[in-house]
Image (cartoon, rainbow, N blue to C red; front, side):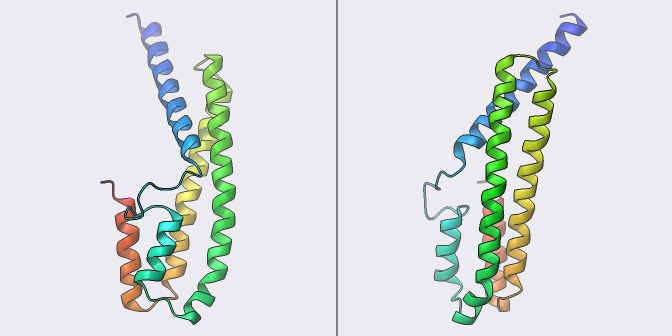
Length: 150
């Protein structure tokens, strides 16, 4: 391959991979986790938290505002991720690997995904401050296990 053709081929492959990633992310948003035993989903986390941490009524009351604020932010960021994924897919459909639409969508997609990860971690650490040391250690273990790939 000639250098310009090789560059175009790599750019097209990158765009296709990014488009597939965006499609899979957008498609999975809102989909519940398959197994309640698998850490990761919000419903799983709340069920686990109440079953395993023995949250007291006072702790529950203290955590409720954090839960509500996080849920609102999570929904907003998931909507941003979904829109950026749709925009990326539309840019890919046009077939121009140099498209500003693709670059913009990728930038927004990456920023929203990073913001969601940061908000989730901030949420866990805010909750940790309202737990006793044993509960906090269990929360950190659950958080660690939900991050580490299987």
